[in-house]
Image 1 (cartoon, rainbow, N blue to C red):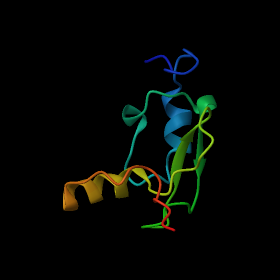
Image 2: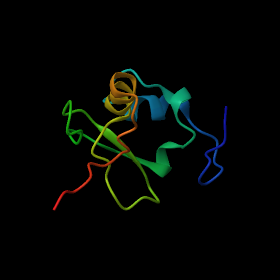
Image 3: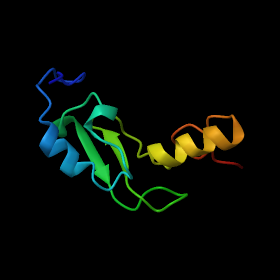
Length: 88
């Protein structure tokens, strides 16, 4: 068991896996945050309509889920970041 990188609590892998269920194939091994330090926002990804996760200390909800961000990096070789850039 690992400690949460935010609050240092021991990560309850079962509860976190259940909360992360909407995040397409990711598991607790992909995160270093406990369930109390992360929020899952359903239907927020602009590409697939899936869920995104937001560490509790962040104020901006990401536009891309981790899977879509990774897919775009593989396809284009460029990291789009977590949020869509606003154009004027």
